[in-house]
Length: 130
Ligand SMILES: [Zn+2]
Ligand SMILES: [Zn+2]
Image (tube, rainbow, N blue to C red):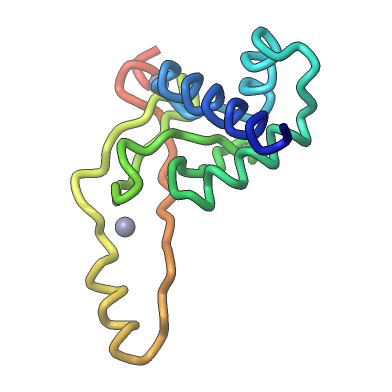
């Protein structure tokens, strides 16, 4: 069953991201998922990831090496931004969303904003100290 297989793959991806507790790249997800599903193709993972993004279950980030990383959301209504350490890939919560006011101002001008992303990267305290 195509549908059931997809559901299982998505569930496994979510489990991996939940356990990782940090953003993971497609390559990392592929390595991890291959331990359970040895024949899984990277294109299949991309497809599942796209569907998880559409379901609002994960977030997408682009880090300094331009590789795309994915992180699980605590819940689908979560609105949070993170700082990401380029070195250890740990994430740190931004205390609040700094562009809500900007969004509201744009809305008053009739612009319909569907989503926004904030990308902040650098070095965390412990990596900077090395
Ligand atoms: Zn770090
Ligand atoms: Zn925001």
